[in-house]
Length: 113
Image (tube, rainbow, N blue to C red; front, side, top):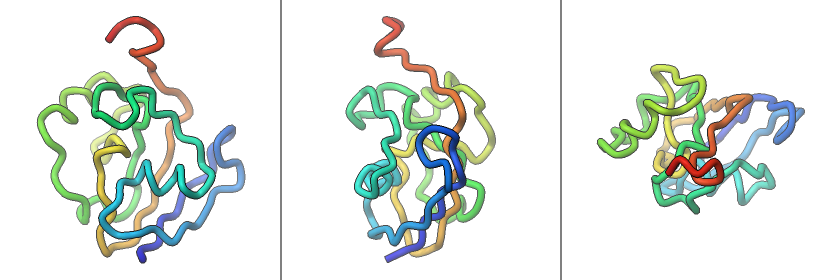
């Protein structure tokens, strides 16, 4: 198990959270399994940006983003150098600190997909 620290998010996780996450599963699945209802409009198929997170610590432990993820991240609100789609980033053996951005762009529900 790897520690996943979620920084406070006004709506999804006001107090923040510390999760013992299973290695090899996505950040998104770990958040959802622990009651943090991060949006994932494309059902985790790497077709939107609603599950965008910023990895504040431990970014280097994640596998490299594939080209499709990189292309989608270019459209994410609040993109930063350590941004990832949480449905694609798999937890390794290094603790992570993640921030869920305040806003998201839902291209699926907004008819832009």
